[in-house]
Length: 535
Ligand SMILES: Nc1ncnc2c1ncn2[C@@H]1O[C@H](COP(=O)(O)OP(=O)(O)OP(=O)(O)O)[C@@H](O)[C@H]1O
Ligand SMILES: O=c1[nH]c(=O)c2[nH+]cn([C@@H]3O[C@H](COP(=O)(O)O)[C@@H](O)[C@H]3O)c2[nH]1
Ligand SMILES: NC(=O)CC[C@H](N)C(=O)O
Ligand SMILES: [Mg+2]
Image (cartoon, rainbow, N blue to C red; front, side, top):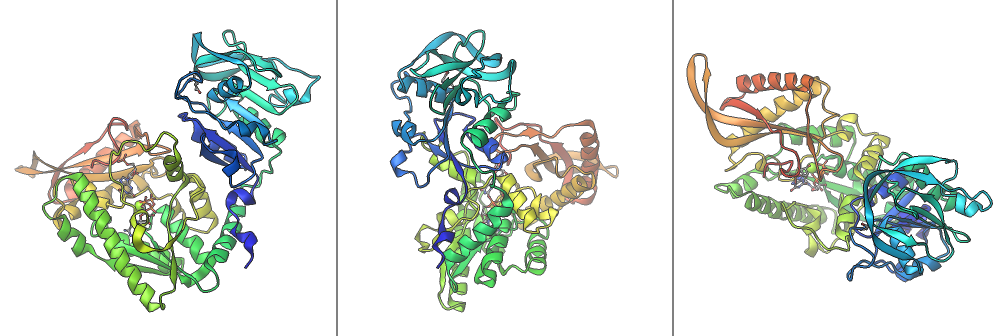
């Protein structure tokens, strides 16, 4: 077996290590570096260098809500400074580096939140010190967010940039490639941010910019083949959503029909969803996919249930039951050779689970078929666990997926069950489905689908009075949701005059065409404080 193919991504590409001290922006640093075509991994600041599974080409220390002099402040492993690779400290990262190497950090009188003018202090006689601001000169607007600052630089460090109130806003060591900046280069408000990060990653760390989805495909397919072996089989839950479809396509490219996808029809899918997914994945892409119709089972179990969390748990548990039963059938059919389970885990899920601060509060129980199959004794394959959603979309395009699939809005596992408020019955699901179908159809027709990150129609469990054909009606209300977001953690409602006219048209179509609905409302709440789904 070609053991080379079993290497992890960080061993196949030049990799920058980003140590996370809990800043809001740590993942943004990761994004920016990857945008240059350089692979990077975000790990908690508690990572010990001795335990690191790869050799980084450079290390970035992130910002943090802590102050270095706090009793419980997160500490960097001092061994990072002995790795022999360039280091860039950002905000807290600068402060921690200064603190550790013998300088001084103090709470400052002039806290800086927002824009500041950074004046560059060039050192033409010392190319190491000048490398971070290479090609820059004079002054630049940068974005700051700090209440502490360096008041004495650590020995060997000199000023390469300052603001009116921060004399050590940027420092560099005069012999080693160690740099610290008080401003945030990862936020778009810092005009020179990209140049500074690129100077660090490409010029100083000398990273090869070879992290592209093209190179990822070949390497990942080879890795999957080596992992699964010439006869091994893999099963996976495939919803027709972007993540699981891209993962399934990659598996199909790697091992053909030895990948067995299972689509569970839970009775709360969108209108014609299962048939559409089958058409695209099976007929068009040739993926080995079985549709398991368990709609009666799901809907029976949901009878009389109105509590959102109970609905989610019932669906999550039933998913697992059905999936396990289907997996056992497939296993039997192919002689018990299934060893692996495919999961569509993305990098944001990984980042969330490695936070050194521990798990955050549960707002909603998210179903995740694979994640709960702990006792299935299958080994996991997660080909997307290094990727962000937009990288997955790029990958999907390169793998030849239709635009329609690549740009699909996410659809939650519990589906329409959490979009029918109150009890979920076949009739209620059908009303929500028909309204949703009209809504999405008109969004596409109006050319808004790509701009909107997620849109759907929810059926409210309230009745309102209306008048249709001179007669009084007393029927239910549809709520339309359309949000713009990049990470789905926060979201803004879609607005605009043209959009409003489209909404009016949609409202009239829904009321005319969907029986049982006499009123349509538009949900204008942002997230937070609301969430994207109603339940
Ligand atoms: N109806 C279903 N049948 C089989 N597996 C499902 C179904 N719904 C969800 N899953 C599984 O649960 C995982 C998580 O669902 P999730 O909605 O987050 O991802 P997705 O459907 O692949 O993509 P998207 O986020 O774009 O909807 C999926 O990747 C898939 O493995
Ligand atoms: O696969 C999923 N299983 C779930 O249980 C689930 N609940 C919410 N979502 C999706 O997550 C994003 C954020 O949703 P909320 O703002 O409602 O928490 C939105 O994109 C939601 O559609 C889910 N996806
Ligand atoms: N953004 C940061 O990293 C802030 C660091 C530290 N908490 C300060 O206020 O200065
Ligand atoms: Mg989905």
